[in-house]
Image (cartoon, rainbow, N blue to C red; front, side):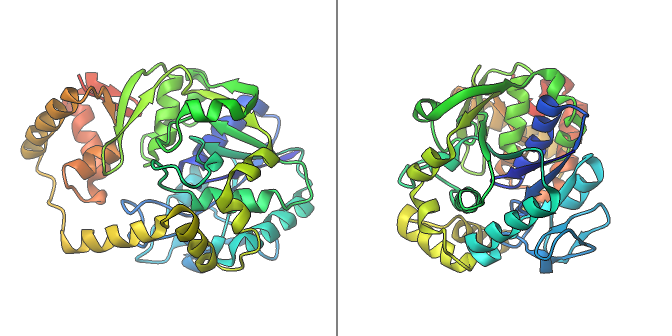
Amino acid sequence: MTRLIVAAGGGGDAVAAAMLHAALYGDEDQAVILTYAWDRLLIDPLPGPRGTDSFTGLEPVTQSVWSVPAGAHPIPPGGSTLPRLGAELPHRLALLDPHHGAEGITRQLEELVSHLAPASIDLLDVGGDILARGDEPTLKSPLADALTLAACCQVNAQIRLLVAGPGLDGEISPGDLRPLFGTPVHTFTAEDVETIGSILEWHPSETTAMLAATARGARGICEVRDAGLPVPLTDEGPTVHQVDLDDAVSRNGLARAIMTTATLDEAEAHSREICGFSEIDYERNKAAWLTERPPRKLDPEDVLAQLDRFQSEARSRGVTHTTFRHITEALNLSGSYRDDLRQLLVSSRPKQYAAPLWHIA
């Protein structure tokens, strides 16, 4: 028996999809997780998502769908977490390629449904920005979710939309999301997190890290991203809710506008028009900024001193937790030092490691 899970926003949504599968379906079957290769600049220095032509070693599933096995490699200078995920997850990862717009993703889904005849299809979004109208001032990354939503609503199959960790992406508040929630589906526990625990040790996703942390009992305020966005860690954090797919499409203006797009450029143009920006433009600008301002190297003594200053300032803002990605950027370290930084902090101050987050004492 095969189940299909579409990771709406890519990145950590694929990791959360594996945790969801274990929690809801156990070991009775395997999943195909359809996900973007769209990593942050800490991993992939090239802005935007990677397509099938950005990898070697992909394996064909259908005419337009390729899987990402452990032996696949992103073509330099591009980067991707998917091959390592393919090695560590018990599921098959399929590459969701947005370069042919919503029409291309719809075609991928239709082929997969026909080929797999899955027992169930879940569209999973961690945080809830898939329910954005498009005009929210806190919205940061609407395009990826809107593309998957636009495609899913055009496929002739029963697809269940699930939102995990309401508000953990810091883009839509839980209060705005609650009226849209239907049946509660699950509340993740510390036991559920164990299925992906080793992956969270290295994967850079902040939203899925907070989802796991709240399932393990973390509560407080977590500071994330380069801008230091404060995200509340509450009892709602580990919950999963079903949302009516038609209601989501009716609310998401960008998803409605891009349904017939045949290129990613078209979809981006609609995002600029409806939301006032494109997240890929932001990545382009940040990539250029990083090129002009090379980060410094990791000196342990200097880093720990800088960390003390950072934590003191964070405490004054009421922050109780942060992510290693945020610390890496706050200390102006290269993304290549993220794992070294984690090892340094965990070994030198183990009591502050609230896996997979860092607790600000």
